[in-house]
Amino acid sequence: MENKKVLPILFFIMFLVFIGFGIIIPVLPFYAEDLGASPTELGLLMAVYSFMQLLFAPLWGRLSDQIGRKPILIIGISGLACSFFLMAIADSLFMLFVARILGGTLSAANMPTAMAYVADITTEENRSKGMGIIGAATGLGFIFGPAVGGVFSDINFTLPFYISALSSLITCILVIFVLKESLPKEKRKLKGSGPTPSRWNAFKGTTAILFILQFFISVSLAGLEATYAYFAAEQAGLQSKHIGYIFMLMGLGSAIVQGGVMGPLAKKFGEGKIIQAGIIVSAIGFSLILFTDSFVTAAIFLTIFGVGNGVIRPAISALLTKTSSEGHGNITGLLSSFDSLGRIIGPPLGGLIFSLHIFLPYISGVILSLFALLLFQVYRVRLRNIENS
Image (cartoon, rainbow, N blue to C red; front, side, top):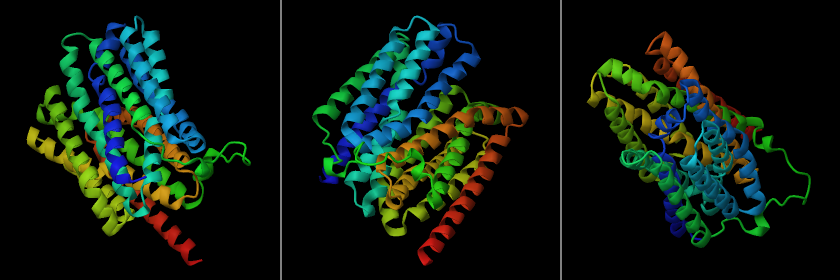
């Protein structure tokens, strides 16, 4: 299979997946409030999605190693469509929670399977480029999705959910009829062909450091996302529409770097250098955010952070699929699980320390970034020792 032909198809599919997901972002809080959600219940509604992804991403990734990538993508995307439709017809908060739980459980299949698909169809030399393209599709979906959702929510609160369901359904049809299977039967880790390995096999030895590193990066990012609107309002007097534009610029900058620059840089310098550079730029971005005093400085500083943060996970994914002997789905599923755990812990932690001082989430972001950089140095030393022994 030629990756040059397949990667654009996969990019478009993942873009549609995340534009559908992004459409509901600006609407869901107000929709939940209309159904009687308190601020605490709204927080739980957001957290339960990530919690289900934490639990199920490794299972779906591992299952994709056994039965192929295409069936799991179909399950994940059709599950997303069902959850959006259930949200649209929800007449109670309970039904909204059911829809979020279903969506989190089934859509947990999408990202790890797509990343495993990329690992299947790319050479090691082009692996980072492929992972970066998936990251770019995700970023662009999150840029355009909320804008579409905001427009249609003015007509009717339920309309964005129906549009997301339709988008997911169209995406599912594309997967069924256009996307080819990337994992031949002879390469599958068939169940029953031997003792079933633990899903934690990938989390052994030196590679475990990369999963932990991703967790710290996700915690710092989620803490920023949860508090930045309040920070920018207080420091620079920015309104919600300004925050939306700023996050759009950040996402666009990140997508351009992931989709256009990351591949050539990884070829020239390797994933290790990309990860280190990404962490350093993220730390610089966190530091600069403290000096925000206007829309322009907010946009520049957050974009610097976003560019650095955006390349880390694709580079880690590429490095893990190269160095681990486990199935690609198992690895990417476990990585998604650590990312979800960071996204569960990050928002309440960020909110807590923000309440102590508005600078603390960003100072802690610098500290976590430096700790992640130290972890990566430990990883490199251990890997060098293994190679020399």
